[in-house]
Every structure is written in C-alpha cells, then in structure tokens.
Amino acid sequence: MNHLVGRWRALVLIGAGIVNGCATSSLPPSPTIDPPLTEAIVELASGTVFYMDSGGKGIPVVFLHPNNPRMWQKQLAAFARAGYRVIAIDSRNRTPGATDPVPAAGSVARIEDLTERLGLPRFHLVGTGGGSVVAIQFGIAHPNKVRSVVITNSLGGLRDPQLNALELSLRPQGFNQLPQEFRELSGSYRAADPEGVERWLSMEEDGRNAVSPRPASAASSQSAPPPAPPNPHEVTFAKLDSWEIPTLIITGDADLYTPPSVMRMFAAHLRRGQGAVIAESGHNAYWENPTAFNHEVLAFVAKY
Image (tube, rainbow, N blue to C red; front, side, top):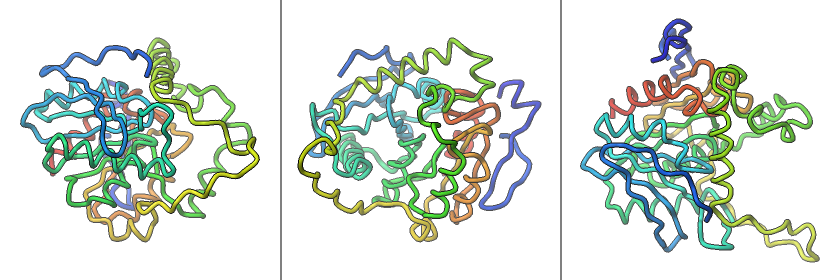
C-alpha cells in the first residue's frame, strides 16, 4: 500500500454501516507477467471475443473492462503472482458490423460461452464501470458459476427510479461534454501522474477503435428500429435483496459518477456485501490507485 493510503486511511463499508479500515486496431502489448499471458480471438455462438489468459491451475479471476481489457495491466501481474489464473475478457462482440440488441445480456452470453470453452471451474468475477454491469448480470444469470463478484465504480446497471435520478442530479448540465479525463480521473491523480493520464486516454481510444462503431441512430432514418427485447438479467433492488453471492463494492473517494454515499445505498441491499473507498481516486480506482485496489480485492477473494 502506498504512503498516501497508509497515512490517510480510506473508509471500508460493510452493508449499510461504516467502520474504520484500510482501505480491430492494433493495441499496445500485453503486460509482462509470469506465467506470460496468451491472447486469442475466438468465434463463439454468441459473437467474436478477444481475451488474455495466464493459464495455470490457480483459481480463475475473470476481469471485465467496458472498453479495453488491457487496462487491467496493473492487476494482472499482481493476481498472477498471488497464484490466481487471470483472464481479461473483452466481452464486446468483435464481429464486424455486429451490435447487440441488449448489450449487457449479449455480453453475459459471450462470457458464458467463453468460460465454458476454457473449461473454467467456479471463478471470481471483477468488473469496473460498464464491466461491472456485465459482472452482476452474469451473477444473476449464473449464480452457481461464480465464487464472488467485485463491482467497482458502478451501480452494476441498477434500475431504480429514485437512485438513478439521484445519480443524474449530481452531474451538471453539459457534464458529458467535459473532457473524459476530467470526468473519470480524480484531480489528485491527474496532478500526480500526467503521463499515466496520457496512457489511460490512449488505451481508452485504442479500446474504442477495437470494435466496429455502432450504426448511425435510427432517428435519421424513415422507420424507427424495433424495440429492444426485455433484458432478462436486469438488475433491480428486488433481485439484489435475494442475492447470495459474496460481493465487494469499490468506489473512489472522488468518483463523480458513483460517490461513496451512493454506493452505500447500493451496498445496503446486499446480504453478503462489503465495500471499500479507494483514496485519491475517481471513476477508475483500479488505474489511479492500483496498490490499494489490489490490496482490497486480493484480501476479499482470498476468503472464497
């Protein structure tokens, strides 16, 4: 744990309570770990998927990023050294021109297909941002396949009118037009590591370019698109109230999307939930403060 986190301790949330505690373009090469990662693009019944895999006999930890799985580079080596088999999946459909009528549900199917092909036993599932949406929906669809779920910097796609309205009320008009690094990275991190900010922005762009762009909005066409089918894995408080999977909720103390107080409202519905606030981090705690992030997640998954 770095000196900042050691001196200015974060908060750890347990359920609703708080206790003091510690808290297809070319892509850059994969991080170097031992054992080395292998990479593959596979054709599945549910779409075309890119993934990285350390192999080995350790308990699998599957990482889900909403844009670029290579951005887990600060986690993969640490978890592999701890004895886990690490797998980072780009759950987006890479089939040229293909889109999903229900993106998260389609991603759930691809994770199911890929983990079955890899012959994985029960695994830990770690998501961030939109990857957390897929992670929790996978847990709803396949609770017997996962040991634990880690939801970071996200409410996991929760559909609740009151909480969703509260989230939106925290962002001023024009928020989405602000620079991405301002919206998603804390001021403390941007000041401390400008080179890291540039690498993060570059990898975000690489990730966006790795899949086919979505078609132009049907608003410009003469006929409206057919309505999307209902998502069978949609996250609601009613489903969370019966959720039995051990779950860790993480956010950054400067996250403008999911600040700690909002995450506590989410965590209050988890019977087997606990959480951590990562110091000096915004919406990408895994990247901004990886030492503290890895400490919290490794300590959690070791229990299960």
